[in-house]
Length: 192
Image (cartoon, rainbow, N blue to C red; front, side):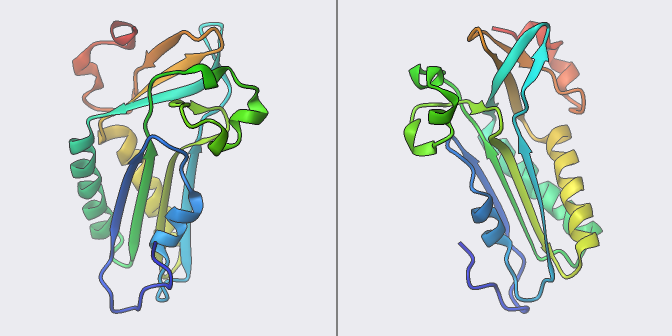
């Protein structure tokens, strides 16, 4: 995407992507590459195997108010640049998905190959749900900027998460970090 790295005089880029497919860490890293930067700070948020109310979580499903996601991420990037002016480029990729299909019943080894599961629309355990990358001249600014981006993403960006369980049931999860979540009632009211 951004290879070769940008010249020092080029303006910073903010790259956002919502995807219903596997997220590429390499793509996010390449998007922020810059010859003027000595650091690329990276965060990869993965689906973890967990228990919720005695049920084993095997994946996550995400929905988003896509038009507002772009607006909120742009605002977060402006805030990052105000706090850390040396930040060169910012990239945030977030997974979306719905429609559990028969491929969800495949063996984990088969699900691990993205090309073998074209209809799997939730994020299985171990796979990336979000990838954020920031380039900066020095690591400290980039690391702080990535942490700030993720905190802002959780608190302000309209992306909702549903846990998918081993029994193929699912439950929407409330994000306690989100300021406006309490306006919509508790998670139990959102469960399907």
